[in-house]
Amino acid sequence: MTETLRTPRFNHVAMSVPADLLGEEGRAELCAFYNEVFGWNELPTETVDRKKLVFGVHAIEQFVFLISDDPPMTAQIAKPTSRNHGRTYRDHVGTEHPLHVRGGLVEVDRHLRQRQAEREEIDLHAEHADRERNHRPDLGRS
View 1: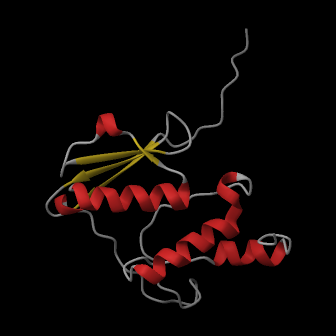
View 2: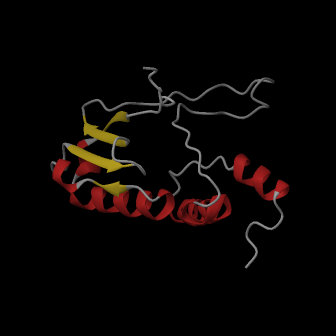
């Protein structure tokens, strides 16, 4: 009998953050943002005030795990080089959104830009959405 192996996928990403971010107000902001923009949902049975917040990410076996720690994780800023076209990228987690998920890349881009206008700490690199819009001119049309 031959076994069929499925394509590997990520199970989870774990990041440490300041405890205040996982307090009631911080959790509410995080949940609103990640649900509205990416469709992630809090797994409330996993929530521990000021200690832990877990988001389900489109499949039961995929999630993002935020835990409080002192000091929390920090991301380094890269120096601009010719290789990165003069841009400064930070450590990050990238996700791919099929065009049928949550209204497509243009809709995700719209939500991110709106949130970025509200919160200066949101660092948006939307080159992928711009490329997709240029290759698919029907995106974003009603």
